[in-house]
Image (tube, rainbow, N blue to C red):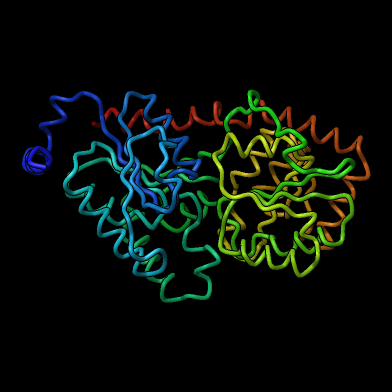
Length: 397
């Protein structure tokens, strides 16, 4: 304890002392999601660490997964009394501010708007480079669309920080366009491409509990929330024969989906899988005949999104069934690796699934095209953008 207080005092009074004596820069990644399953944070942190940096990821304790040694970086997880809402964000940001204040880091990385303010304030106080990685168009998420006051608070924070940021990245060109139009700052675009999964084997059929002749679908996501097509998908499956659906992940509407499957008497065709590490998730994904990404065009965030699961499906070499959102549909159409529905409804999902199920030659063609697309739509290629982005920052520290 005395040593910790001593180090904190030196870091505050002589902020360059450690920089002179320790040549390896230290980067702090802040995130409110579960550290264990935030693939974007883990992948980018891995790239930064490979550039001769020491990485610490700061988040919150969310469950038993946080007790396991599942993250290959130093971590600091806050135990929070409040799990969501205003009080959670208030106290998380206060704790994050003081943690960054008394610990020495050379680079601060804020992941999404809900961690930006304390990082911004500390970066100004300590004259540190700050990276802002916007995983989504935060003020356009569906949870804020009917909450004008809350959305207004986040917008005030964004308006007073974003124009002053020098190092910004995001996940799609559409979001980058939006931010450039609003604030005159063009973020670098680093897409959520998946790691090469060639060395991962599919799940054995006996573990899938799949009957002979069934078509296997997967619908995965770390945030299976409102307006992401889950309800429409369960209704569609209730109308289809010879189908087994895997719903893999977690989110706000998961319990509703389970109740809906029970109410529509299709629990024998729907299997729910809790959040699992990416390598294990990909074993299920590589076993599937098709993957679904069904975000509805009900808010700016979903409209401009380019979700992880799209690239996971491509990496697994399976066709994608998706709604007609600009970023997602562009990838699918350019690579002819799936079906784009005009809208996300149970009827359209039934049509798309039936077309693939009843046309094995067409299904195989889309599979082959997904495999071809995975050669360049992968993290090994996309991560070069991260290296280029951080190279200039590391020259500052």
